Amino acid sequence: AKTTGTGDAVAMSCSSVSSWAGHDDISIVAQTANICAKSVALSCSTISAGDGDDDIFVSATGLSGAKASSYVMHNSTIDAGNGNDVSNLQTTGTIASGCNNTVLGGAGNDLVRLDHVGKAGCLDFVQSCSKLVLDGGANNAVMHTTVDGGTSSLGDILSLEHNYADAGALSRLTSQVTVKNFETLLIDLSDGQADRFNLDSLLNAVDILRCRGNAGMDLMVMGDAGLDSLDAHGRLGSPAHNDVSVEGFTETFTHYEISYDKQTFDLYLQTGVSIP
Image 1 (spheres, helix red, strand yellow):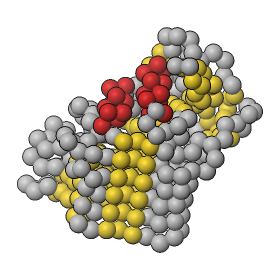
Image 2: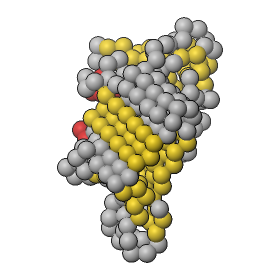
Image 3: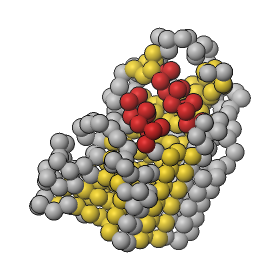
Image 4: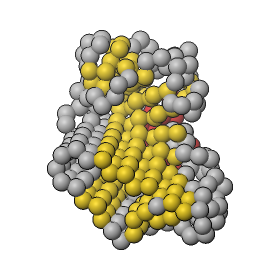
């Protein structure tokens, strides 16, 4: 749905999309070029992808500085079904509005991407008094490589991208969204999003999420060459393994085993990220 007029752009309203078993590509896009209007991708609607490795893209974007905030879903459900699925939720406003919004990964190793594009704004994940549940579901066994050049499988991954890949947004995620059954938090600082990240801030967010239904959650960080970390307490030390592949990604990573708050975390930094 796209509008340049005075009305809001609503892609799906009181509707459903269902697919059969097998690989499916589902794309729902709402876009407005009116500064007084908002975009809504799903309103009181449901996406059910069924079994198979599915790709779901749901986007609601509007003009920067728009008077009405766009949102991906309003009282709606995205059920990716069984399989290794990718659900990409993109917005210039928030992810959810209303009191009943759920994203389900289902069985398999899933990737849920929350992507805030355009002007950063306040970086909320939900509208005021709204609720959003992100449930990674059951996953295949998490396996960390034991050798250089090996492959790791990191279970269900929640990825924060573009403007959402921010320490301030992380604090809002833990306070605004119910996140459960994810094994890994990915902070994606690619595309020049940042030139430095604070390791303790990221570990603190993962620590909080571990206590809220994401037992044993670990951390991945991706970024452009030249990205470095602020590691004020020298937690990283020497890598456990180099040139590691992670299932579902084409990039390679450096694997660290680090301690924080009397716990052990596995950290994967994209190759090329520097440690001062």
